[in-house]
Image 1 (cartoon, rainbow, N blue to C red):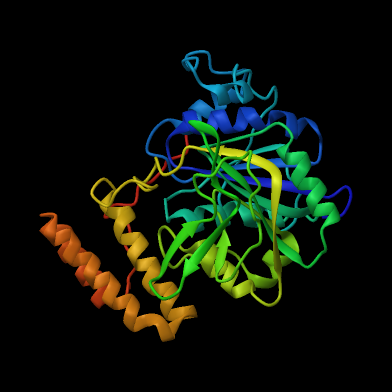
Image 2: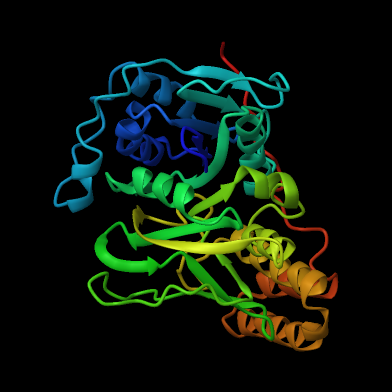
Length: 357
């Protein structure tokens, strides 16, 4: 990132506006620095999330309960708003080149999934020639005060060949416990992944070497604009999951990865789609099937020699669901595996959003 370049932060929301507002409030100091722009993509939320964001922007949201025994709340409370205005746009409705406003609210007409929603924001960000990097940030995160300046310093000082960066991500309810140092390892034999140093304390020394195959943890993922233009945007083949590994595999050999130890965000994780680290029994069926579809698609595309073992593992997953007494989900998993993960699962009814402007 050249000196004076702009860092665009893209945040995707589907409902859960309270999480989004907490994230945005923690980012207000970064906007005041003048070299950061924020794009919130509302992915056709089925509730009044857009109206709530407008209320926050207009001077805070006093009806939101003050957190109790919440050590991370100091980074986003009180809700004072941004003392500004939204540049509101419809997804796809922008000029080929423009200058990003400090705050942009981009409304998608339909929820086509995580990658499609993020790509709306990425395209808008890349249309600003001053943007040198895009930070994809989950809406259920809160950003530590110095994190944005730490990221900007890393982008200015690291070699231009570093195309993507990860940050330290900690648990929101356990602020000193690491969720990931920014990297996830991928087991190509079983098509499974794990977050590096999940559960470790921030106070202990932790290795931060990105080991392939793997990917930057998508809750906090920074991509140079040059790398995005070279490799392309996120794959929209699935509704959820696999986007980070897909992009990393496409970028391998051309772009390097770096992990920034002192850039910290806290993450609630998995609330919107019933994902996260819960057991299979508590995970939503959509999240379960999307994850299985992604495992098959990624294996077929990037690790085809591993497919026989991956198929065996996933058919075993169907039997496990049957043993738990969930015959319907077991049948859904088996059908998806036998179809090779295609078509990728999507909600039976994609929620639409009608603008109120």
